[in-house]
Length: 137
Image 1 (cartoon, rainbow, N blue to C red):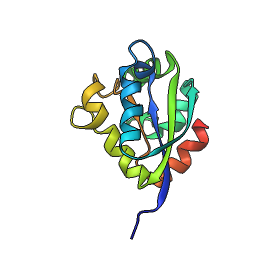
Image 2: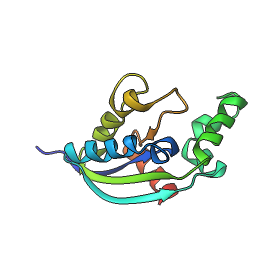
Image 3: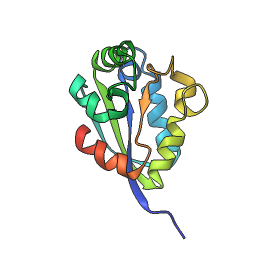
């Protein structure tokens, strides 16, 4: 039984897009080598309002300190991000594996500076994808 063809995306945050292009190039190569199809690339400029919608759990009252929130806003709004839209069998789980966990695996192991400056984001579930894609596209 084959897995269902899914859609997902990888958000390459500003530090992966500006300056040294290695994180972006590495992400594109990794996605292709994993057999996922890249269907679209889109530059997006984050705003504070968009970040609150994309990461509601990070901006709820009491869930994060003001300094953390402001650091996230400053980081994500300083330059464009790039959204790499993909599709393929099990795309959501495969993109999570490609992205990896900060300091543990995948692209984040190679490029994340810390929990905020972690270079990449992708949806965790099909429901997250459906909610987030509307915001980013």
